Amino acid sequence: MLTRIEIDGFKSFEDQAINLTPFTLIVGSNAAGKSNLFDAIQLLSLLATSDVAGAMKEMRGEPLELFRQTPGLHAQRIRLAAEVLVDPIVRD
Image (cartoon, rainbow, N blue to C red; front, side):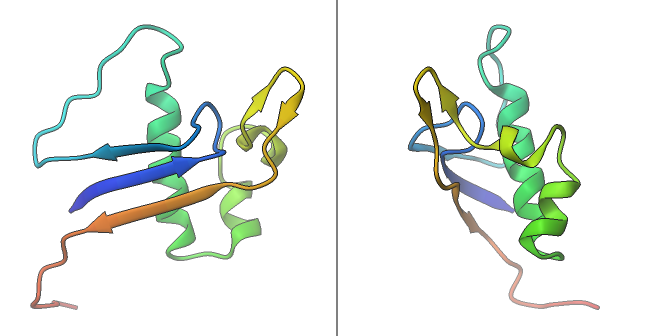
């Protein structure tokens, strides 16, 4: 279970950390970044099974559009971190 995600330089996110509980609601006005949060989670998921180039190709939009852009500033990197709870007994 994903318990925390940290995002910096990805789409609309700049140095954000979000704690997640077993029942978390994501609500907000239009253009608040809800879809971008789910895109960040999707990117983390893709990176677990693919290289960076392959994961970026699977995302919505062009790869350069994934980097945070503001007037006069274009992020040079994306930083993602996640904390997860893993069942100690792994079943294959």
